[in-house]
Length: 394
Image (cartoon, rainbow, N blue to C red; front, side, top):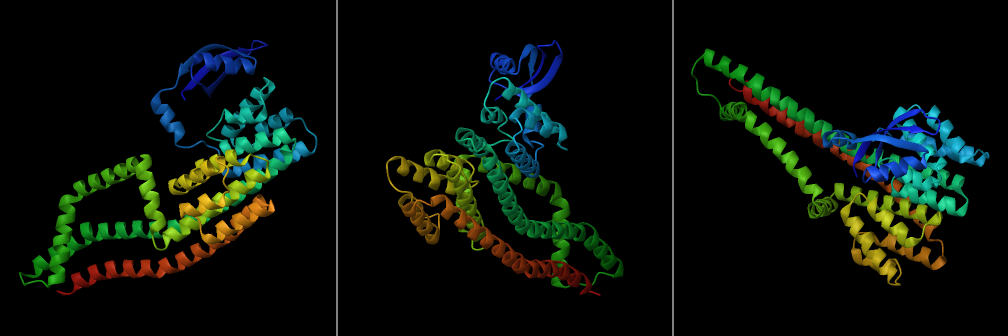
């Protein structure tokens, strides 16, 4: 959807400026009329600017958590919704988020529901957030829903941090090894080679000759290596943007010995937490399953959830299609079956999420403790091998 830079005047004649997403200028004018603003001029943002904006929303999960908790407290205290949005929009430390909350407030004042006003900003408030708010509006429990949302976001962010911490250490070590080997091949080995030539034409040991040949090859082909790495990264990103390519990548990741187990447990925890939160908030199961699939973060899990949703829409239970997908562990299937039979599926899903989030913590600690010595041995072997090969002639 294109983004427009617009100017208009409100009912008192004051000039207003802003940026909004809309299908076309007519839709933009209609949206602004809801905020009691008359559109005067509008201009589409260039595709380059839109690309820059899509890199990040400028709103962190922490901002959303603080907003939902404060909003729930204010609503519970009896403050009107518009006043809550006005206070939070003016007091938040994130100016970008404050601007968005001000736009939401204007849309609500124009007659839209709170959930529809949030839906106008899909980069900040996703389908899960909007649907939970809509369920809270329908049931008159918006404060309870916002508290549940805050808890969900906090747990989701904690899980994401644990996964990132598991991947950060090996990535950092690989970068350090690459930099050290680059310096050794481009600077250190040529210095030793010059020294050996100055000392005479004695035949060098085989390891030394191999390292010198590697240094020459690396220095000569460095531009081609850089271009190859760039093309590899660009090709990988294009491949995972292709739906089938993303599915192949996610399948391979889930099949990996150690990383795959961690990713699978994380996906199960995310699925259980999201679906449990939606069901406990009154969202219909078919809508909840669709939202869970879109927010799964893994195309294999997404297909399994959508397959289960289709079977549920045909009148079947949840257990059978989830079991047929071969994605979810047997324990999860059994607990979901018990939850369906007892009518406490949402509570059972929350328990599954708690269990697998703890499992992710244990798996991350185990992975880190396993990778540390392996990485140290690899780093020591590479650097030590280069140093030994250079000192053999001496």
